[in-house]
Image 1 (cartoon, helix red, strand yellow):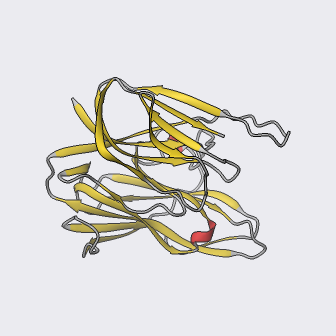
Image 2: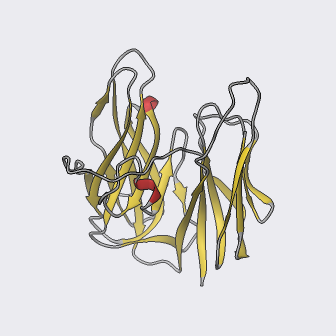
Image 3: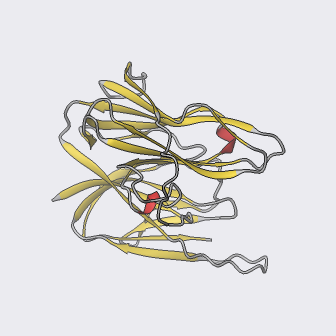
Length: 260
């Protein structure tokens, strides 16, 4: 079966663990049946946001909200909603499912991605006639990594807008892979890291999203030895999605991510 995919190349460190019997995560703020914005090709939309919050000076935390899709369909466009405090947002992720026994920080290892973004990430627009399947009432998790490196408390309010269509010709999916074992010597020199992911089946790739942290200097994603994203000068504030000029179809593809 041919799948249309976006490759999420994440250079981030997430820790897994078992949840405890603490309080349930807060419910996301969900606004349904919004009039789609002019740059959205969908027929209707819904927003999934954290609601207002505050991160103390010098604070850093992974925060999760749970909610359900108010309408099903096919997501033909997904975008960041940085309503307030984008300066403290490290990244956000929209995932399927609920937290279950996973911690908020570790849930990215067990829950399928629908969208990921950071500072400077623009809307993900699907190719014509393509969309990500979403069921009516399907549970979702919104994760924010909030980092406040200032001397004052900072407010935030962030999430995603999902633009949907009732029908598409091709269903899209995501491939998410990362390298988490990074040991960087304190010698002032540049050091390279990388990892390879072999995938079974036939896929058609149309975009990729490389992501790493502030001390990164360059990052590249290759599909069967050819670059589909090459960022020789990494800028944490410019975490754009890299669409391919023409989609690439590959059988049993090999994806490689490398960074310095």
